[in-house]
Image (cartoon, rainbow, N blue to C red):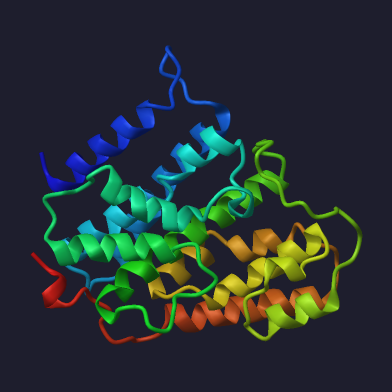
Length: 271
């Protein structure tokens, strides 16, 4: 059994603890289980579009995708919420569980540390400035794949194609939006959740994610699926919001067409 298959078996054994006697997960946890699969699938698509990544890079990235939300099952089981502020930081806890559960023990120490650190920062507002450069590729990859999967989920949710009572924005569904939120998104800066005053503000804030993708293949996937166009369709008619979509698509096209230095896991992070 290869390394990823062993990791997947260990992941499944952990998730089995949260299944009932019939092997069924609660609806909320089934959704998180499916989300993990989607992040793994998107990771593979991004890697396939980035020719400079090696099979070893791909393994590290796939492990990050597999483990990035592993603490969500414990979080919901204990607190009946996915809100970190009401429970724990799920990035920090997922990273800790990799050690606590003894996951992927066969990985060399540097590779394992790379996975743990990437998982730890996958949900943070930004990658810390002092984050180890040897682990940046993995951190960027899992953040890209997670954002794209979340965009898909949000679009399904607001279109009524997906009903999950655990998706709680704690924001009123009121007409209009906060002008400062739109301006922040237009400027390419990420929007702070606590600044949002309505669900429309939340939707506007998603456009800033077009500035927080890292790989040309990530941008290509967002454009091919028209993810930001589909978010735009969830908002009121407005020339300013139309301009926001144009801005997002322009950034994505620039990234998709860019020639960037190889973003690789350095030799010292290899087996």
